[in-house]
Length: 503
Image (tube, rainbow, N blue to C red; front, side, top):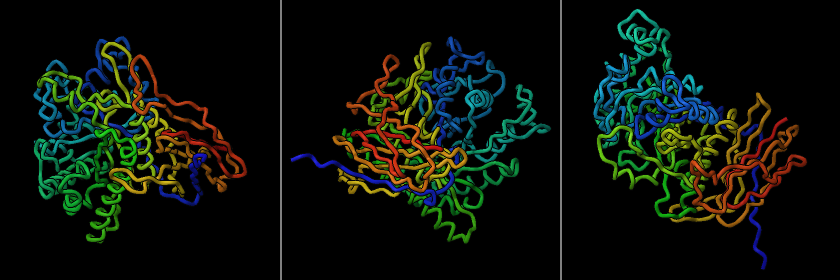
């Protein structure tokens, strides 16, 4: 008997609006960790480096991704970081023991240099303050140093360091993962909530135009989740603009079908945090809606064993250097689609991280920069995912896996850029053996024509890219066709697809 063709359908309508997408949904993260800074964005003697030591080959790849905002300087590292160590003449900066990753931090790069790099990379900075070993005083001083024009001690110190104009950093994180026992200066939810509130109040007195992000849970499996969120917001609700979410995914058991379903878990995580925010809003009878910043997400598990073997107290050892597979790229595409479908509440997100450390971009010391498999879905959604998120109505066959039931083989997100008259449909076929026979109803976009069907596919789920060979890269030979308001296409097994329409 002939094998039954798997059929799926998506209905898209311009009236099915989820919300406007904040471009910062496609942000990333640079922490003083591993080779992210030293040997990543910065390599003084590299042939492609600027006078300041920034690698231009890396900057070009960051520009290719169109990264709108980068979180800095951490991460776990920020919880014991004295920002003053990273400003002023480089020759006078102290080398310090960095406790989070047990390395030596030479402080060649600090706040001002990173601001310079961000300008070169066409991105904004999401700054983080230390609420582990420090607090209100250091936070307000750093903000004054960065954002106040002149005429005060800290702003004039910045000017004396060669930065006449203020950096005007808009977005600030109030600490990092303060619920985690691994964090230097770990706090209870009440302790953190009180400190975050008072820090927020002081910072707003220095610069009322900033936006503030409070720490949510370090992941959805924390024993204090979501009580942490509720308690923290009890204190901070009226003084902060965003609550953070962090989550990493892995396929330690080698179960790909289960792995590709993990975004169902992510979807529940976002819904739980949203519901918790809305509970506090109701409890406080507030008119304000809390938005979310998913400011750490990625696949992270490949390098765990190697990281345990690194000798402590070296400078910029190769930590967290996951080499990503084709199946990792599929999950990253699904994660990005999940964020797009929650664009009404998730306004910022950061793929952690950007270069060398669990990253889409890798470098060789003294050599080339290259693209990991996960570079491509990130690039596609960042470039084509600007506009309004539309709700796709999906009819798809489903499967059960070890941890999930009723997993749709078809995953999708839709973005309408009304300004440019472009419609982009992101699609993932989770089926590991069979193609999906797909029809998409786009009758409400009757004047639109098919522009492109990009496909990322590979017969080897474990295929990886290296500096010498790019085994996983997209092509534009997808078979989508458009006739009388209906797109017909076959989505090949285990594939990432981008179908673009426009006038």
